[in-house]
Amino acid sequence: MNTNATIDSNHPSPPALEYRITFDARRCVGCGLCAAFCPVDVIEMQPGQTADARLEPQATRPQLCWGCETCAGQCPHNAIKVTVYGGRDRFEGRAVAQPLDSVELARYQNWARTLKDILGLRWEPVAITLIAAGQPLPDVPMPEERLRYCQSLMAARRGRSLLMPANRHACPDGTSILGLTPMPAKLASGELYLLFHKLDNLTAAQRMVGERPCLPPRTIDATLVTPLAKAALTPQVIAVVAQPEQAMWLLMSSSYYSGHRHELNASGYNAQCVETTLLPYVNKCLNVSFGCYGCRASSDVSDDLMFVGIPLGEMETVIAGLRELNKKAIQQSRAKIYLPPMA
Image (cartoon, rainbow, N blue to C red; front, side, top):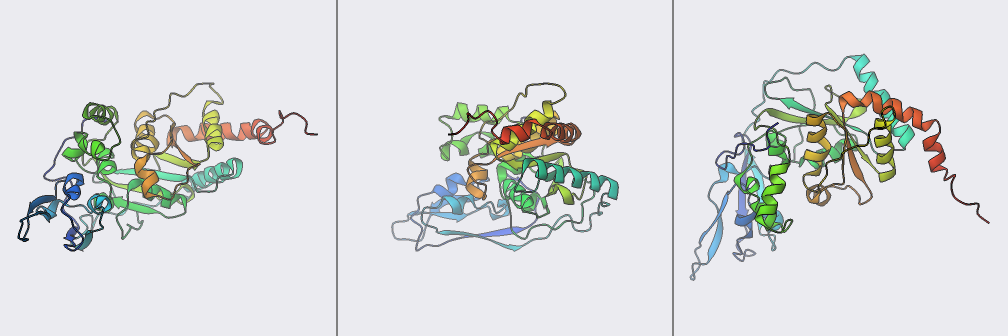
């Protein structure tokens, strides 16, 4: 694990799909927010063609754009449009991974049923695999649209299976944290967090960035998320989108045989990429996340849900502990047996 990934503002992502950024001159007021918020410095403010030579945004480095649409999202006048117009997938021709054997897949299906039946989960548990550079890719569709990693997890809980190389990821933060690309300079410095008004000062922003884990750039070729019952590769982490009471039972299940109290790592920043995925992946320990600005702003996750990331090596213990707890503790707790008699 590398907590200070290489900064590469000139080449933040391998060349693949190309993007066109257009500005509607009738709407644009030259505020400069698009240039300030662009994480990879595609846009500059330059003198325009008006009589007063007012500064206008120009896409001076379009080859660096990876289509995250942060510029469009921050434009107060909806004057920006980002579209794909060319390029090719650099993984064309890559060897296809063999599907899981029936015994392994049946084990994951059994886990998924147990989690859903005992906890009463509304959504599918999600199998997560970070595919190392150069490894075969599974026969799983890539989304036509660019998605944030947290959006892909939310889609997988609804039943979709998604394979996403860097050119399908829309969030520069998550993409670099998970080792698909180098980290853009504006993110590594903490500057963008101040622009979003998510932290008080640059020192605080730099501390937040410095304390989070980050895989070395380009050590991961793609993220794979599927419903656990439809796992295409051996998962490294299983993510459960749950209500607090359901998450509580998962923690208790993990501790059922040991009595260990969990030391959870959560901050409200980089929830799905760091807290639900990377920390369990690296530390081999269950972790809980309450979500973050990005995942709650860009997905349909409701306010009453949180997230639990469980490393594969801990799943047998969690499933066994959950079955034991369901024999008495879960049933009695949900029956509210300690409520006083009601008149």
